[in-house]
Structure formats: C-alpha cells, structure tokens
Length: 110
Image (cartoon, rainbow, N blue to C red; front, top):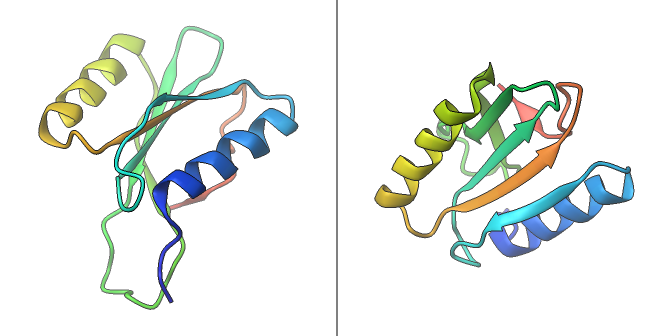
C-alpha cells in the first residue's frame, strides 16, 4: 500500500484540527509528493512540542505516517532551532503549527 501524498496529508491534518476548533496552519510547504512532515505544537503556556517522523522499522506495507515526540513542552527557541537546522538539511520539509493545550495531536506516536 502506498503512502498518502504529503500535500494531501498536511491539508487533511490542518482541516481536521481547524474543524475541531484548534488553530492549525501550514508554516512551510515542502515537496508535495514525499516531503517529510514536522508538527510544532504551541501549548499556549510558553512551551512547545515537536513531532517528527519516526524511523521506519522495515514496514513497507504500512501506509500510515508515524511520529515521535522529539521535544516535549520545551522552550520555543529550542524547537525553532531544530526546525531551522532540519530545513537547511532538507528543503522539502513541511512544517505544521498547531495551537493545542493538551498533548493528543491525533496522530500515531511511538
């Protein structure tokens, strides 16, 4: 089974959260077909979390995007620095920004 295109996945994620009443925007658009997706969560208390794609464990038949929490409720500058470094390395990166007081962003996290 093939993966959903990055542009479609990001559009669905943003729309779903906005429909739920959460503020969610695409901060950066990457490669529409296969760009990696980073999700930055502003917890509205001065902290941010960063979710990045989890390393695949050889599951080529799995079409889901699975994330790992790279930073949990960290300083905003630390999260921004990590995103900036990744953009230098991978210009095809997508960055989504979500305002959410809780920790459940609605994706699979390992």
